Image (spheres, rainbow, N blue to C red):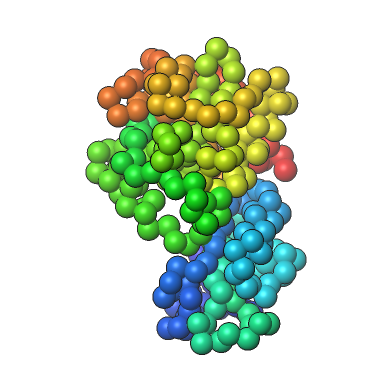
Amino acid sequence: MNDLVYFNNALQSAEKVSLSVYDAGFLQGVGLFETMRSYNGRVFRLDDHIDRMLTSAEKLGLRTGYEKNYIKEAVAQVLQANELSDALIRITCTSGSTRNLEENAQGTLLVTAENMSADPKASYELAVMVVVSPYKFNLTDPLLGHQSTSNFARLVALQQAQQHKASESLWFTHNNRLAAGCMSDIFLVEQGILYSPNLENASVAPVTRKVVLELAEELGIEHKSTEIVIKDLLSAAEVFLANSVMELIPVGQIEKHIVSDGRPGMIYRQLHEQYRKTTQNQ
C-alpha cells in the first residue's frame, strides 16, 4: 500500500497530513465516522454509509461542508491511488477548527483505506465468545443512534472483553433491554425466527442490519424486531453478530453459557452465505 489518504481537499501521504491542534474532533470528539469494505474494487453499501453520516451530521448540527458525491469521489480516489481492490475503508468527518466559527466553514474530512483480503471460510466456522458489558446505554444520550467518534466508552468495554478472551461485549440499556455489541449488531434465532433488538434500543442506525434483514426476506426467514432481555439471549438457539467489516460472525458462548452446541447454526450459515454472494455480485 502506498499509504495515500484523502485529507480535506486532496490526496496526501499519510505521514504528511497536518491536523490542526484546534480541531474539534481531536479536542472534543466532535465527529462522525463510517467503516466499510470494498470487494473487487466496489465499496459495499457506500451510499447507505454516507447517507447515515450526513443525516447524523444534520441532526446533531455538525457542520461538514462536504456533499455526498464529493465524499464518494474521495473514497474512489483513495482506492485507486493505493491500488486496492478488497479493502477496509474509513471516512472520518469532524466539525473542523474550534477557532473557525463561520457558518460556512468546512469541517475536516479524512478518508483512509488498507488492504483487506477476503476472509477464508474457516474464519466463519469457529463461533466466538462474547461477554455482557458492565456498562449500559442511556436512551436519552443525544449521540445514541449516531456513529460518533466519541467512542471511548465502547473501546473500554471491548478491551475488558478481550482481557477475558472474548471477541465482543454486549450492551444492554438502563432498563435491561439488549441493544448491540460494542462494534456490532446482534441477532438471535429461536424456533426458526430471526430476532433483533428494536431500533429504539440500537446503538447506531445500522447499515449491516438492514442488509441482513433484506437477505432474510429473500430467503423466506421470518424476522421480528422486539425488546430482548437476558433470558431471551440465553435461551436462543443461535446468536450471531454483524457489522460491515466482520460481516457475520457466529456466537458460540456468552460468558460461561454455551449457545446450543457452540457451533454456527443453520440460519446463520444461510444468511452468511447469502451475504458473501451479495458482496461479490454487487
